[in-house]
Length: 441
Image 1 (cartoon, helix red, strand yellow):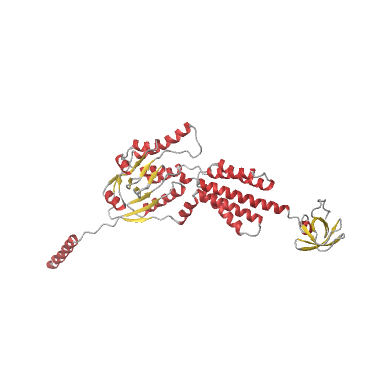
Image 2 (cartoon, rainbow, N blue to C red; image 1 turned 45 degrees about the vertical axis):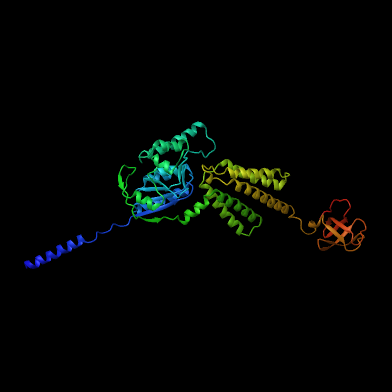
């Protein structure tokens, strides 16, 4: 019995020794979620960032890598994105890449908010001076806006252990830094040519979260999972382009106008309504100047007045000018990428103005002649005597044979003009005769 116990004990010890002497269990491969921000900072990009952070927080990622190339964007969207980065449970790594990319204006605020800020060689960051979107405010109002933005930057740059003075210089005087200058000024934590080099440099590094907690990054050999934008995000990114939104709005308005003048066709009206709603939705995501909206409305009114009453072209020209200025100033854009393209605005204003004027004039003329049917429509038309009129006979008018009466004898084949009618009897006169009042129908 004793030998059996010793034997069992020996087997147990042997198995334990074998397990301990075997190859060690390899740690699971670290996961890094990746988001590409290659656009302006606006409502859509803020929503994409929220979803990316939520995904990284839920799938156990070691970090969320944001590859960024942006000229900047809207102040309120930037504030929302900074708040999301600072509140993230998963460390955020912002990497300005590839070469030639930039973190301009609002992008600089995001870069400094990250747990790890990195740049690729040949990139730049800064030029973060706040630009007013609603015209030119007074000096006091502008100073309040600037001080507020600088205070926001200071509130987290110091807690990230970075150079507060250099960061404030980018916001106060639009200073911009190359990747090497940013590293020297302690605005970024690393320069790396690609993701692999970045992960190698950051592996094992201890970072300090905004709360003050320490965390070690394990990024060597990390598996990168790209978070692609959803179909909804792609559609919204397309609609938030002010040039697309303007085209949708104007083309949709023309289609609705055609539907009103050709009732029952359905397709132009339905498609036009959809395009107008999409255009309004896209513009609603952008800061709009209401004075520009008034200019657009004035443009439509002027074009309608020109077509209906005629103004020797003066009203049409004024309408086209209002249309062009309205489109140019419609979006209160802090960066050129969020503004309407000037060439597009002028071209669309000329084309839309001319087309609207032409269509409205056709409709007005058609409505004025709408009551002219049968003999009424022939008054003023040219005719030809098919036989001698003495005083009655047959004439050819607009390819139709009518019975007509003349005030004097008319030879066969003589050119005539219809000057009136009585029931279905036309009154005609030689074409060179002076006009006389038409008879009552």
